[in-house]
Length: 106
Image (tube, rainbow, N blue to C red):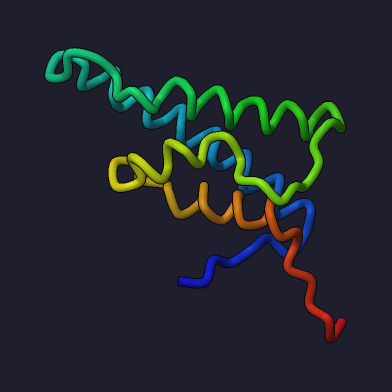
């Protein structure tokens, strides 16, 4: 499966903002269902921290594209089937590793 990469910095930032929203929404949903669950999934806290750090680095101007996976990918590989927005996280990671998808015709 070929993952789509962001075509602009603005799109990339928007994806990261969406990931922050999605992980917060997942936390709220799990809190609502907390009576049925003894505890949160093990991946939730590190996933949330990693996405928030990525966003903060972008805001601070400290973010750099890289060849290595983003830290949260460890959790996506292990628990992707439990993370409803895992495809978005994979696309962010793909853009991080390979850069923006620039159309050469433009």
